[in-house]
Length: 204
Image 1 (tube, rainbow, N blue to C red):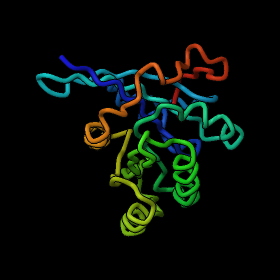
Image 2 (cartoon, rainbow, N blue to C red):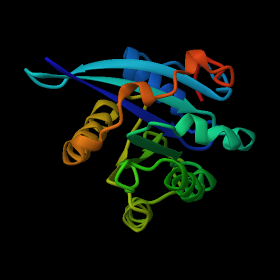
Image 3 (tube, rainbow, N blue to C red):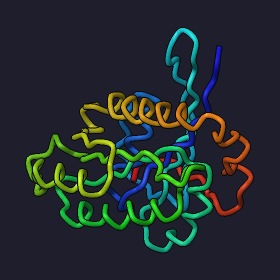
């Protein structure tokens, strides 16, 4: 059985729900205890993609605090896909997605020079206090080169698996078109060997 190793980044402002999203996706559980991610948190999930293919995801949850931005070039190395997340009850977190996407496009490039596939996720869609409209998200997503966007609720487990499946599908499609240039798994930085990568459990 073929196994694909895919490094996926999760980026966005602090407190939008990135770590909760990863925890829900990897373990199936919701953790409402907030603990700020310092630097990067690292998780692995194995998917049985088809009868002949397995996909091992290295999921890098990048801290949303400005002071960690300078480290992102190291964290982004070898990434093949990205989730940019914001909180629909926070217009600032939505506006900052432009900064996250530009930073990503500057630092994470595929071997053929293209940007890595990126999906935009609107979290906390279960909350009545939403301030960001679907029309605004759709327009922003198209204007900034996202593969697609989805509303998600980590708390209610809405669209979590679906969003990641859509991203993995896009990554595999892109990788198959560049196969001879596909980066080797060892090009991914191992956060357990990187002193700058301080693992912090909890939700962000």
